[in-house]
Every structure is written in C-alpha cells, then in structure tokens.
Image (cartoon, rainbow, N blue to C red):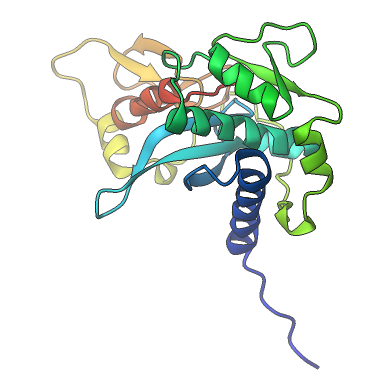
Length: 245
C-alpha cells in the first residue's frame, strides 16, 4: 500500500494566499502592485492591516506587509475575508501610486479607489457610513468588480487551512517565559534600580499602563501579556498600519 503524501501546511496556506494576491492584482489592479509579505496574525484585533516598509532584504530591498487577522479568518464569511485582503491591496496601491493620508487615515483618494474596485468604504461596514476616517471598514457592492471577481476566483486561490475560533481564556494565565524572547524575559526579570515605575504595552492593541517593574500584567481586552522593552515596539507597528478595521 502506497504511503500518502506528506502535507506541508505552511506551503499550502501561503502558496494559496500568494495566488489570491496575484489573482486580484490581475483582475482589479491591472497587475500594477508590487509583491508584499503576506501574513496571518493571531494577535491583531483588526480584520486586516497594511504596514508600509515593514521588511527589508539582505540587499536592502524594502517591502510592505499585508496581514489578515486569524480571528476574522475563523469567523468571517469567505467573500468578506477575501475582500479584507483586497482592502489592504488598495492601501498598497495608494502607497505606490497615490498620496496616502496621515498615518492610519483613510482619505478620499483611497475611498474612490475602493469604490472603483467594488468595495464601498464605510466606518460601520454598512451602507450609509462615513467614506473616510481613521478606522474604516467597507461593504461589497452587489455585482461590482470585486463581487464578480470573487465569484470567478479559482478554487486554488482559497486558503486551504481555516483558523479555528478559540475562545480566549480568562485573563489570569501568564504565558511561559519560553514564549517570550530572551531579551524581554531578562528585562522583565531584572530589578529596577533607577525607576519606580515602567511602561507596559499590550502587543495586540498597544494600550499602555505604568506600574512596578516586576509586575505580570494582562490586557483585559486582548488577554495578552503586557510587556516592557522590546515588546513595546509593537505599538509603533500598530500605529504604522494604514488599515485597521
């Protein structure tokens, strides 16, 4: 009896993600968009995000990151999940060919591009919402370019692995230190000799609090351990995201 082939989930998932990007780049953006790092993030509270200049290669080439929230992937209807990727691609288009608004702001140029490709901007995600603003959603225009493209999307562009919806535990369990980079663990464990208080930052929502340097603090909204030092850099990444839903 032959041995079944070994599945490689990472290759399957992200090859499909790349095919999805390539397909919508072709049908909605005329193959204009440069490639980006595509990722699925279980920590972000957003459905998706775009961070310009997030990655750099050894030879100095810089590329952005387009991220999809794992919770959205677990719970959202497929057409809505895929439209989130296209929403972030619209930010990528504007960064490459237009004039983005201030950090995090969805301006009229972006809103017009979204409407052109069949996604109507709305701060509520429903008809009648504001077209521009800081935290923007969208709704799918019936029989618009995106709706038609999604209906014709090849099966191989669908992500084969779907995130499982996992209920967050009560905010009492602290992650093992092995889950935290060594430098951060050392900072957390070191006694504070010169400061009475330090800043703790949630790596998911970037909320800050101040307290004694040896505290174990959990964000009540995200159920994530709030960290000092290296993990606090997550705030800069979140603020740099041009598309937080």
